[in-house]
Image 1: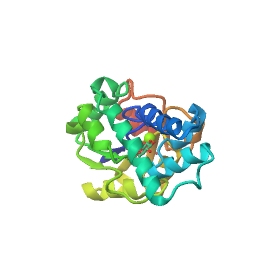
Image 2 (image 1 turned 180 degrees about the horizontal axis):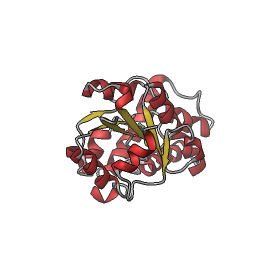
Image 3 (image 1 turned 45 degrees about the horizontal axis):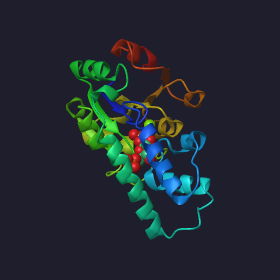
Image 4 (image 1 turned 90 degrees about the horizontal axis):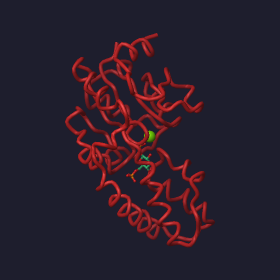
Length: 219
Ligand code: B16
Ligand code: MG
């Protein structure tokens, strides 16, 4: 039985990874080094401060800054990132997503966001998605990053739904592990071999139906 679907944001609903990357590159340039797209892969789904550590390591600067200075650097990156996401519109919602969310709601299935981002609310508003979500658990409400199950466990708790009746949609292996540790089934988005532990995999939401979801995860 599926009562609730919990969606990761970046890489599942919208592609904000490109804006995170651009904002980190600007910070790296200011500090005097390059941050390549290959290195940028490692920050997907990772919290802001953990991303900063990855960026500083790429520039050999991991031991150069105090905790206070690191907070200031992360805040500077966030200011740039928010300038990018302030320009987002509903056109940036990934193909098939809006249709699928609407199908879930019509079927009475609860729709929840489960994201590491502290900016998730702003993105939902700019993309006109807020009315499609019954609940939002974002980086402001969790203290432990995926693969810790906290974000998804809190989503189920918020809606008073048992984990076994929840399905998580994720594009990162750490998110799939978090779902499994929360006692939930999962759908791995995007076709990466790293998502092989998901209950089912899906290339994109285009044409995806509730029946196909049930068939894929109810086994
Ligand atoms: P913020 P998700 C994650 O979003 C991003 O993938 C990751 O790159 C980012 O560092 C993290 O949110 C925190 O974002 O700086 O906006 O709080 O995939 O969990 O939706
Ligand atoms: Mg993601």
